[in-house]
Length: 348
Image 1 (cartoon, rainbow, N blue to C red):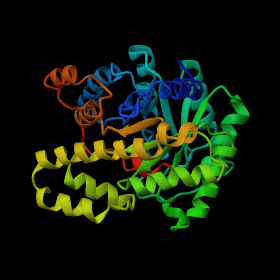
Image 2 (image 1 turned 90 degrees about the vertical axis):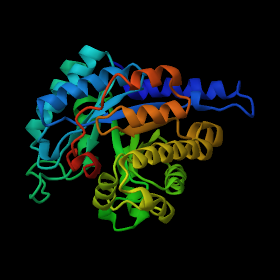
Image 3 (image 1 turned 180 degrees about the horizontal axis):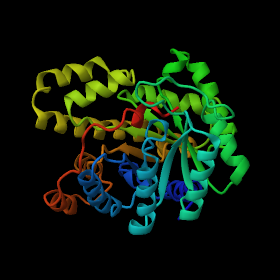
Image 4 (image 1 turned 45 degrees about the horizontal axis):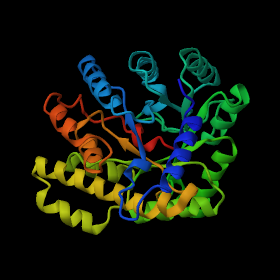
């Protein structure tokens, strides 16, 4: 299994070399790559559905796929099993989420050793949230935040693991709007040994572009991957944006209001919105716009469904449109019941 930091570096070099061959009027989607996130379903039916989705989506050659880790390690076993299967059965590079909230050091040690033995070389290191109904607390002798976890992994395993961390274009909620403080926290994670950044969901590309520029100005030079969450239902969109305190442009709300009760129109709107966001990101902070400091990949929160993400990639010209139209008729989405809250709020 590949170490993602090395794989991404190779892809970035290829993309930059490829820019020299682009014509001014040529679409540069071939210089971007993509990755997918999934969460462990709660039911056996959901797991079987997820594996069908994985089989289909991995055929599109994502740079990696990742699997979330429930609050306080509540999905630890299923998260690891799915990650191990992705490596063994599907031959894909996987990044496993790992949170340290309420986690004893001995458990973290056990998980990291299991990952190494299974050939899992990529960890998304997060502070995480406590289980529902519990307060956040630091276990005695444990970890206070993601910085502690990154340092610990580096201390035990050197450069064996590629370590990803979370980024917040709007600032982490605990920073109460202080973007300078939030950037200090991010830089501390990178200085501790993080190799890449995956951002929280957002719906304002202006905020994301500004975030990338602020990162570079602060000396944060590792790859940054925007977290794209297609709107798949109005209720789900409202729930997530309220939970994560995500800024939603008024124009977006105005566009959704007349169609909020039409599920098909909401999904179609979500696909078109995500496509437009990806195009704006590519144009304003892709490799053509910012060179080596730019954004080279798109990270999609799939909600365990292939349909919306595949349609977005198809419309961006990043996967074959004709084949995708045929396949979309053959496979229904996996179990897409509401994912654990920590899929989105645990990124800290």
